[in-house]
Amino acid sequence: MFRRVKYKSEAEFAKLKESANVVAVTLAEVAKCIKPGVPLTYLDQVGEQCIRDHHAVPSFKGYEGYPAALCLSVNDVVVHGIPKPGQYLRDGDIISVDCGALLDGYHGDFCYTFEVGEVAPATRQLLQRTKESLMKAIEVAKAGNTIGDIGHCVEQYVSQFHYGVVRELCGHGIGKDMHEKPDIPNYGVKGSGMKIAPGMCICIEPMINLGSHKIVIENDGWTIRTRDGKPSAHFEHQLIITENGTEVISSYKPLAEVIGTEELY
Ligand code: MF3
Ligand code: CO
Figure: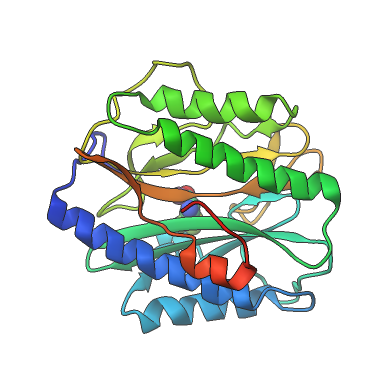
């Protein structure tokens, strides 16, 4: 982890776009397989194969000992769910699929939470609103604003629904390392923190709970769950800040064809 922000050149932005494209396509491939009865380990295999087919390697596998290519977080699992044998999707589940790929020295990182079959209305709303909080945060993630503006935006939007904003985990800069400075919390004070500036590549990733913000970590050292057992949503986009504005590089387009929705990016 580098303590200072590493600003990127145009050539580096081009590479980051290639990596982001690999994760976007991979997420779409995994999305095609999401239905009741599917083993989580199968989704992980599909994801890993797709990453490797694109001559990339899974960023997560081996990262601080993480054992899989994807983080698959079902229902009350907030993030870092490890796909384990014997786990199957069920009707009514939600599953966040978090994917990272390293291509030609640069990382892509992207996450979307999917519905499996018929999902409870309150949970569907949680997903919709968490996605909206990300879209709103992207609007303020532009040169001249601050990192605090991003967190403030997420927190302010979801607080009206009395959702819990997970505080222990945050978004991040990304480049040659998957986690670079700055940290990007999903809460904050307007105008606080580092200035957003051209050359930055950042991941914004709201993790929002239907109930309390409190979390617990499982004995496997990875799986993070809500303390109250209520569902949690997680969406992530990767963006670059240029002289000419902000560009979302982790497109939902390949995904939109699979899930049939009109997404913004
Ligand atoms: N997308 C997550 C993040 O930004 C995934 C990290 S999972 C790990 O932190 F296994 F690689 F740690
Ligand atoms: Co991330």
